[in-house]
Image (cartoon, rainbow, N blue to C red; front, side, top):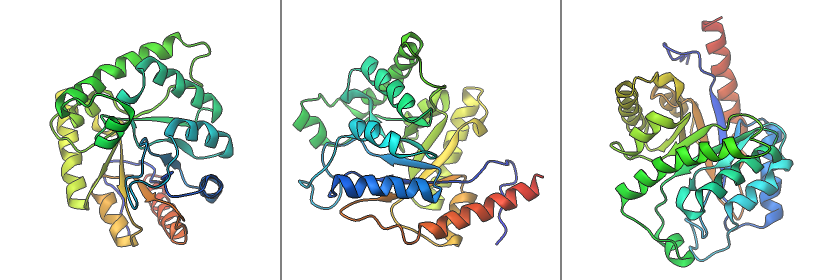
Length: 273
């Protein structure tokens, strides 16, 4: 099947979220190194203090110390959290942490930001959980504070840190995304992703922003076939992120996904060559 998005020559990318739960440190470390060497474009962790699948009282590792430790274990892929909750840490400190990880990985860092949602995270660690709208507005305010802190840090980030916003909220989250983000992450069926991308495009037009400036990523919770990946591509997602959780990570089908990526990128190159 030949499928090239008619209005863009954007490169198709593949990522993996390696969840840090139900797994030993060595197994997780090996998974990061393996995916990087296999040629994925991005590797992600998550920002929860407890597992969100399997045994909810099982083992888990913290997000930002994981990122700092994994940064020098990788050479090629961009890395980040899918996504970090802005309210779990002082926002100026969060900017400093992002700057530091940017140096640790040689400028391959993406700041993934979200409003948070898991009650247990808030309750067990003593954070106040505001209402949905308040949390999203708080996230919006935090973005300017992060950028301001970047400008004051010495040394500054290695290069401008891309901002990814994750979430499905059509009224507020996608509006904030349209105003500030370089990337958006969603999840759902191809039809749902297509609808959300159209909503995001509409928000972009309201703010006089080119929708093509925002890379569209989609999290998939299992591998699929080429036809399914093509459906997500047709829905506007150009960055497929496979979600993997411990105690073992399944990478047997990763090669097929990477081959699909390379084939589609070749088609795009030929069509726009």
